[in-house]
Image (tube, rainbow, N blue to C red; front, side):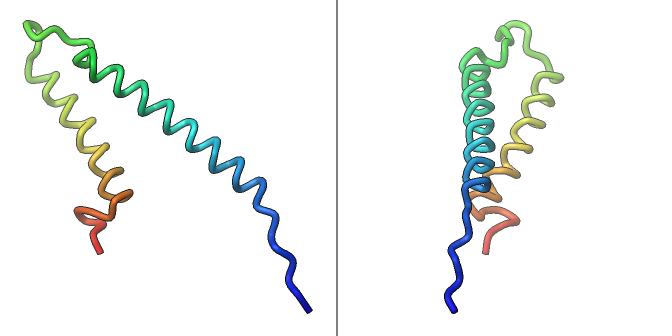
Length: 74
């Protein structure tokens, strides 16, 4: 008896939808970063630093997981 190959069309569409959403988020973040997170250098205060460090920590979690670095290193 032979097993039929599983149709992965739904999984492929779900994967591509998630990838598209990630690509959109990354493009928006890149544009925001290019604009210095909509902050004038003269207006920067420690609150901005805290916010940016929060963003960085969240992105670090993602990149560490994706690239198997940090706590996700093998």
